[in-house]
Picture 1 (tube, helix red, strand yellow):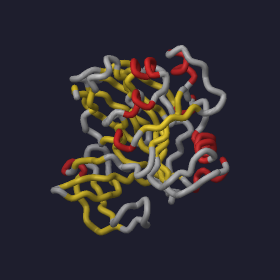
Picture 2: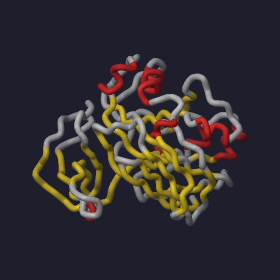
Picture 3: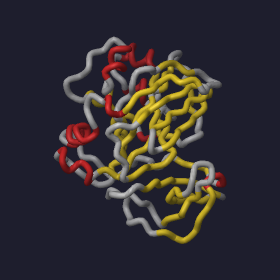
Picture 4: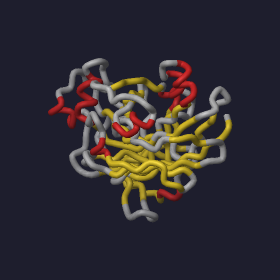
Length: 264
C-alpha cells in the first residue's frame, strides 16, 4: 500500500516491546501515536496510546524479509570520482537483509578491510508484491521513503571485481529514522557529515536514473515484495571512516540517520 498524504511511520522499542507509531509534533518534541500491527500489511489504526520519541529506541523502520537492491553509479559526479563511466542502464547489486541496522546502532568495521566508506542515499520501501511495473504506475507500489547509508568496503570492492562481499557485511546498511509517505522526492537535499564535517551535498534531482525508472527496471528483472528496499545511489563526496567516527546522513523532508563506527 502507499500513502497519498504526508505521514511518517517509525518502528521502535520501549520496555522490551516493539511497535510502530506515527511521528507527530515539532522537531525536539515529537510524539509517537502508536498503531496496531505492521502498516506494510494492515491499514493504519491508531490505538490511542502516545509516547514521547525521546523515551523510545528507534529501530530500522523496515527489516526486509527478502532483499535490499542497490543501484550503482547513479550520480554522474560520483561515478567520475571513482573513475567510472555512467551506466546506460541502472547498475544493480544486492545487499543481504542481515546488513540492515537501526539508527544509533554500530557500523562494525570488519578486519578484512582497511578502507570502509560511507555512502548517503535515498531509500525506497516497496509496499506491495509487484512485477513489471509501468513507470506511470510506480506510485501504486511505493510504501514510502527513508534514509540509508550504503556502507562499502572500497578495497574489497576493487580486489573482488564484484560487490557482494564489499557491501554485504553485517551492519553495512543503516536505515532510518522512519519512513516518510506521500513525499515528493524529485528534488530533495541530501547531505552526509562525518564527525560533524560536511562530506556529501547534493539533490536527488541529480540522479541519472530517477525513482520511477529504477522501479520499472528492477521489477522487470525480479519480483518485488512488501518491505523490499531499493537504494537509489550516492552522490559524490564518499570517503573513508574509521572506528571512533560518527556518520550522519540527512535527507530533506525525511530526517537524519546517525551511526557510530566501531571495530568489529
